[in-house]
Image (tube, rainbow, N blue to C red):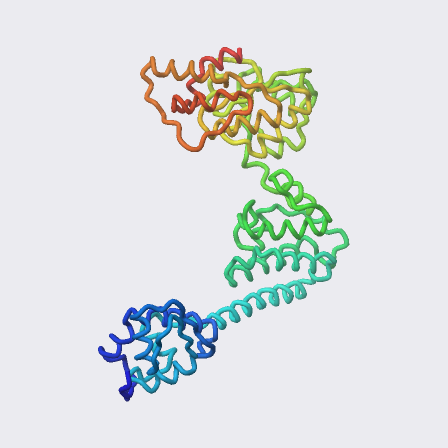
Length: 432
């Protein structure tokens, strides 16, 4: 490879390209590419190729214009760069590698640019905190430092990170204004606050990055722990005089007859007397503290159809429906009933999500299983087969039933999923 390089500096000619792409040089180009990308695309340093085979020794000897005879070759990248410029390649190492493969990436420059972008995020955040006077709050410096060290924003692209942290600062500045002695004297709806910060009423919904950042600030401001569940998050919002949406989520009930004298309890009794179901919101449950007869047994089901059928059949037993998920509003009602001295019996779907939900309810409230044991499942599966009901296959990972170690193996063996409606007639008998 001793011919002079091409004067026009264009693409490599076919003969030169064929030589440079021979298998014996593959390892050299791979290691040289990695080194240049780490070195800011500069041909500096030394490569050491070990365990060379005969084709590699031959190719390296021709390329370097010196004999390579042993199993190891040490190659100085400045010498390789000079050799390539004087050869038929007619260009340095970096240009040659780009001819042979994809464009080189200056990883050092990429890292530096990323670090500069991250620095701009925090510089913007600090400037925004100063301009809104939020920085005058004693907890803000720690809040920003926690965000910086926590890595949550570092995993976002710089534009998103900057947007969210600025929105969080603006939101917290509204909640903790420097010129108001008692910030809790001003109340906000969470949707209203979110619209002001983001333009969307859902910008501070549970699970959003912005809501997590704002809640961390509120927690620090009130010197309390960061909330780990929905009820605790709602409580923390209220400490900052922010009212979460407490009317869109409801819990379905039937037959509740509290004995207290409040209008809410009277309304529940009246609806129960007329066999009408009742949807209770979190807003209502905040003030409802039902007084129940001692030892009242409350049945809890998973599917609204059970409530509907109980109302149609004029059943009288108290009934609460989870609607397939133990949400905050469901747990709030069950907590209030437990505090009033009620006991619970639980029934749900015979499928794995149904067993998981049943585990949660039975463990939290020491609820008795309600026609939810292995013999109940076997009976319903057999009855469905006798009646020619099409099988619904049991899918997903098995879940052990906390109340009956035989239930999961029995369900696994039969492989049939049974929704709560399969036991509807039996449940209605119990609710009489």
